Length: 196
Ligand SMILES: C[S@@+](CC[C@H](N)C(=O)[O-])C[C@H]1O[C@@H](n2cnc3c(N)ncnc32)[C@H](O)[C@@H]1O
Picture 1: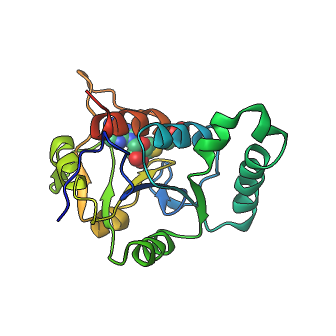
Picture 2: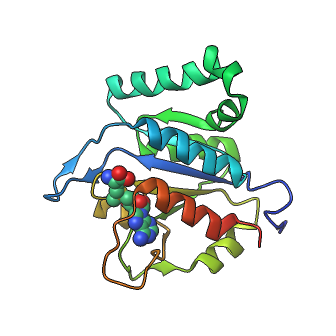
């Protein structure tokens, strides 16, 4: 298998997804969360900066898909596209999808093999993979990877159970560990793909 460093041309085999369902709310009920403008823009900019392939916004709610579509069209086709071409370049990575299954199916068609599913979260998990090991694995370009981030109170157990790997959590020195998904995604992408 071909092994390449991410520094030359990025990681065309790696995509990310932001799940708005299924995720927990504060009472551990499985809910649908709302798409946010900041999550679309900031995570897309990180994905573009670190040379990733696609950023999937996953929500099955038609009204939320429509909202995401309107935001994307504004910055890709409208006045926004000429006002800020750098933003347009980041948002070109974004795809709106109904479900995690749809994303995995699309990736399988695109790459001709199933993507490895990697979940993220703030807690230690028995199937944790280190940042270093995952970077090493993703250097094999023929194997597609999907790194999944949560909204609300995080990804459900069902999503963790489906994962091929669970990425080790980001940790600070103390007990408090409540990063926004935008911050967590940027830190994770820097650790996995950043040039040192
Ligand atoms: C639970 S959501 C919180 C969303 C929050 N409502 C917001 O405004 O961003 C945060 C997501 O970011 C990621 N995340 C947060 N803290 C993390 C950590 N310490 N290590 C790894 N990933 C983390 C996970 O994908 C998690 O599902």
